Image (cartoon, rainbow, N blue to C red; front, side):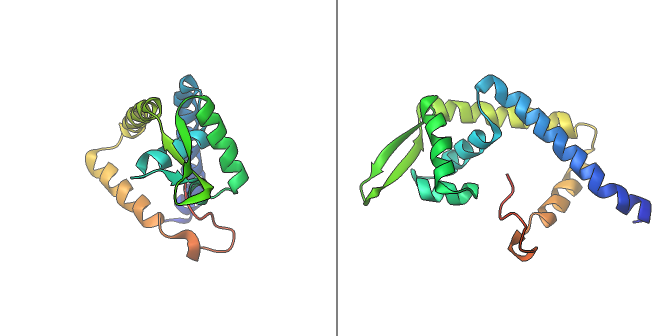
Length: 153
């Protein structure tokens, strides 16, 4: 890679990431969700069983109080329910409702469409190469320095 290409790479990557974020915001707006709420709902939807609030906060890489605020908003929207954890009375379990699962399906479809739109200019081979490169970059960031985020959103 020549020095011009190396110099452009971070800017191109960040512009593409911003484009993806703008698209996400636009697609979530009709659902009344913020990206943080959508991410929490996706984590809850992927879990085989209800999650404790502390586990959700850890997966979101936020403090428990912030997770409570996110869950409050999702519960108000009717997308999740809370229940006492029968194994630990001090813990609360969170699970998506039927409406929450329907929103998850719509979000997944919206993400598929957004990806198809974004990557349409790439050939199937280029898309596969990009996927492989991004997978290489998506390593455990624990080894990438003290200020590196633990998990991508």
